[in-house]
Length: 467
Ligand SMILES: [Zn+2]
Image 1 (spheres, rainbow, N blue to C red):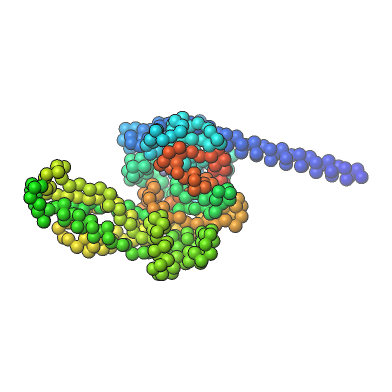
Image 2: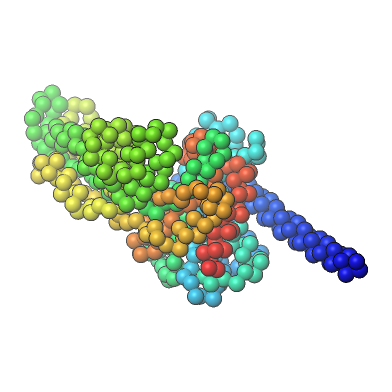
């Protein structure tokens, strides 16, 4: 009896101690959540609208935090006011560095359409409101918190963890990630991967996860300028060989041109992974092998009616800028147009250009390349996907981690061009209706997402840096 009560007593002590530990861990977790919310509030109040950017203010905000935490960091100014922040904590070097990247600039706001001040970071209806909440200051803060948590806990790391806050992403990144990779590549040369924006956890209206989207690839911009020349003259005497007419005819042929359908591996995987979510049973089967299914013209027509679908299975051309005469009664010597071309990650820009020349079929039209990024996809059989699959399965058993193709572009290409894998994944659970604020009005992030994102990102980074 005596022994038994002693055992009970001891067991009770152990249980008490365990409960205490759990409370302590839970308490630490809650403190981290509160800190994340408070830091994101401060960060959203820093106006980094690009143009002009003024990211230096955000870089100084991060620098102060890193200084306080005893983390080595440095600000790099690519031009006056255009700050980038770089910080690193050390591992034992047995794994390549994990780079946590996010841009610090935001797109302009149209205050007339906001129901709150876009830079006041108010909390309303369980959301934190402000420009950049989703794109992408929220991500910046959960990345920061992951780094701080690992540093404070003294977790032994195999990989260094690098924090990189960049300027200028919303205007192409030349002053930000582009500048860092061009001028300070030594700082990130040892990177095994870069984590960046775009992909997220897609949830239904019921809050259940549909899939975890981690983007390994983006369409590559291949912006072109077409210029026609012709005999100038007075508008009262029309000429059949005018520059404007030549240009219009070329554009007419381009507008009628349908680029070939092509299903990249990441796109094939994405639709196969989400097939079972489609409400129409017949369509589910089709999506499971999109490459095959698109050979059926009827299905292809139906599928590509959705503009997002369409942009993920072909190179696209948008005619966006036009310039002719600046006077109504003057036939100009020159007329030009710019095309926003986006290439799939497996395409060759030179081949596309040849095809386009044939479509235009007029050697008198000059074609200049305005912007061209190499189309590249990062591999999907990497440790990052294994880690994310593990975590996704623990949080949402049975959920798929899949590979959405971004039809726009982010800072990732600067790293992919250097052979460093870059993945877009923001650990926020987002129903479609919450995405409208990105580059739109009333951008906001739920308090729940800030908390969830803080823990999930910390766990992702912990596993990437320790396993
Ligand atoms: Zn962004």
